[in-house]
Image: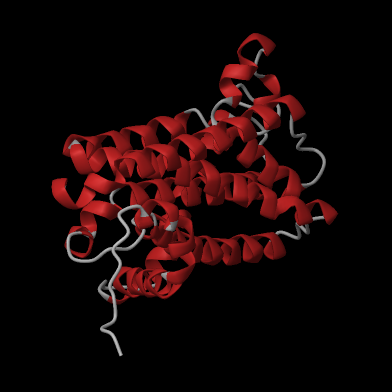
Amino acid sequence: MGRPKTIIDANHAESGYWRDLWEYRGLFSFLAWRDLLVRYKQTVIGVAWAVIRPLLTIVVFSFFRAFLSEDVDVSAAIISVTVATIPWQLFSSSLSESSSSLIANSNLITKVYFPRIIIPVSTIMVCLADFAISLIILASLMIYFGQIPGTEVFFLPLFVLLTLFASLGLGLFLAALNVKYRDFRYVVPFVVQLGLFVSPIAINSNEIYGSATIPDFVKGLYSLNPMVAVIDGFRFCLLGEQWIVNQIGLMISLSSSVVLLVIGVWYFRKTERGFADII
């Protein structure tokens, strides 16, 4: 009986990459669970952070709405701001966590082979856990104020998926850049802060920053921000038809999210081979 042969295929990492994602699903689950435990177990107040973060944003923007608007309905303002804050928190946290995930797991990258894209995607799973807790907060507020969503709520998963497309695409791109150029870690807070001001969070449909009142000649440019359609979509799904989603703006935001995802995956895959050498 002859000795077993070991065949080393130099192209396996390329040809079998996407198949390896399924083979390494156990690692994906382990990383997601580990990040979830680290986030809440090694803190003073634990899971309460997932409640405090969105609540602080809701309180600030609710006061912002109250000072800018005359004769504002306080309960409607709180619900409107909460509905807009939840998808924004999902986007901003997913972007921040995924863009820094490779540097945080540098020891793992240099020791063993696995599809590196598992790392940023697993961090987004942790952000989805925070998102679920935020939804519980929103449901409690809506029940308290007697605001019950209609059948439009069944479209909500589509806008959650749009949020994940945008955050993952941009997160993959910045994560790859952050490996080679460490100063890109300063870019992410700037992007998040800028996005907060150009997204329709602390508004209602007839105020100056409302999506419906944006002039037509800049509406296309405004809609390039994927979170515009996401926030308007969340309000439509949870608050009813008084929040109209601009169809052209939705298509532009959807296209920009898909483009971000394609570019992010392409650049990540292009630079992935050198991560272990550079990091």
